Length: 366
Ligand code: ADP
Ligand code: MG
Image (cartoon, rainbow, N blue to C red; front, side, top):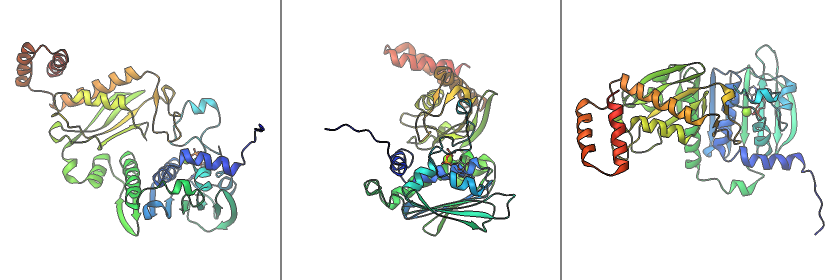
């Protein structure tokens, strides 16, 4: 077979990149909302139709873009957020890879309207399947509106992988909830198939939890905060008596970015050990703040996984902070439990059981 290497045309390269960045409508919503947050929006509206398959529209009141930037923004690796390697090691924004707009535009029919706060006039850019077809002046209000129509219309393989409208809606709702919890000061409206699902006004975390999960849940949690710069942990913890039967209501943020991290989740669970019934899990919303130099957020295009420089000290920090938070709220085992645990410990030989009881004792005696 003749061997010839070609550089792929940029629209094909963008379609390939889109496969990683834009897996489903919810990932488009995540990327667009993150752009709005990075643009210092104080209010974001998300409108979807058919689980985001036919329409995803994100409107913000952020800093907007100049006409020039509005065009460049759709190029691959176009970003205003980093310019040097040191910036990459010191990420303070949610975005930085410069892929989302290019990738989304490559696999949809997209229309963006944007205007800078200090400008009298904005622009409207229309992109179809990655080809910019139109750029015109536009009398938009300050901020940015990105309308993504018919996602994956030109990548049938990917479109066929989409699940039902309901399932895609659920994934989008998860994304919206995660943002709502990490940015309580931001107004957030979510409309699906012409129905207003959420309309959240600026507030504090506990108030926001009430608005998102309801009054009842908000009465089963307490706020805490430990540590100081450069490592801080704060948020809301569920009281053990109200533990849940699944892990779904566990929210972990690193420098305001929603992340998934088994090790930290385990540290939290460990701190609750002996306070929970078997098979139940604590509710938590945790905000971990660290020096960006000590963590790598560029592990995966979705940016939901991170790598800590020193994972075991992070584990210990979380474990001891949560233990302290629980004990400060008198939620550690009572003396009676400790005595019972001692008696039990004396009568068992199973090693792992002993270890568990041992840690019950040390928690109880703190
Ligand atoms: P990244 O967010 O990684 O920089 P994107 O492709 O998501 O890459 O966006 C490219 C650039 O477009 C951003 O760096 C930013 O300058 C600009 N941009 C995108 N969305 C918005 C927005 N809602 N408001 C203002 N600027 C935006
Ligand atoms: Mg982005």
